Image (cartoon, rainbow, N blue to C red; front, side, top):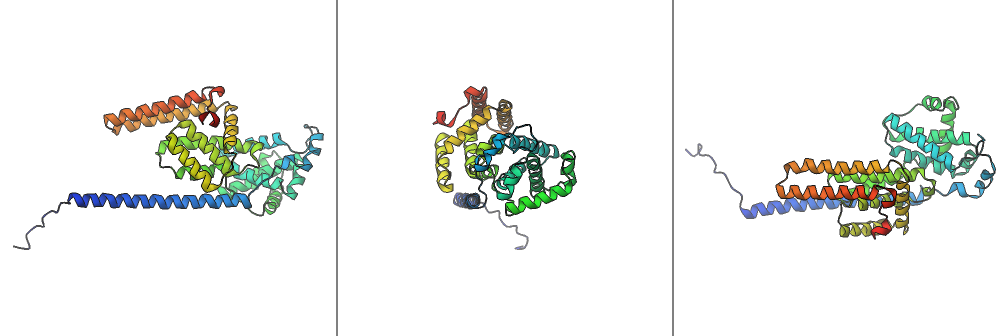
Length: 348
């Protein structure tokens, strides 16, 4: 008779439920704190790297650059200049887009190129545009080989040059570049700093996507602009990230100021962050596709609000739709025309 008796179901008391909720909350907070500490440690390690092993001077405006201005720009053997660098970077972006590689790989390749051209071996290459073109193509070849799941063969680089270079020349140039930059092939990039900064904020998936889209757009413009060649990647990444946050207005102003102050102090960033933000905004307004980009971000926010409201109670639904519409309207209003862009100085 005792064996056939079923155990009575036990019901949790209110105190037990509260204890369970508190424990769950404490575990979540501990995990978030550990993640923040790990992210901060990674950021500090990248800051140390860029201040020691990955610095790059203004190599085009040095003592050796004065003779470069004496040559005719139409001469093939004339020294490379800012325009040559810009054209090769545009070519690199076209190649990675066609091959469906990450566009961040171009930032890595140009880090190789800039540091190589600033070296003693690179200064000789800088005086010949043909050799400069070979160096730029080789840097992309090396960056893809290291940072992409698939590599490009030297024969492909040679064919892309339309017969100007042979596979053997590509391989020899690669050895020269790697020796000149001391085989430092994992540079901290501005977009990598943006991704780690984003990890410090507890945001939804669509907010994260919107922020990174705008931040990446600015960091890619900085890669192409020689004016940023000697600016620390952490400063560029932080400025682009703050521009995206201020433009989308996803975070309330008080929290935004606290985040900016905390990260600036932790990473010991340059005091010229505001100036870098302004320069990035100016670069954005000069791009013909900037309006379409920000409209796309606004449309993404509207679409997410419509989808998320299907599972929300009426009061939350109205609030989410209103917030999303406000963000979208403000974003389009700020970037409707280049004159209406909100700069960091105006925001302050």
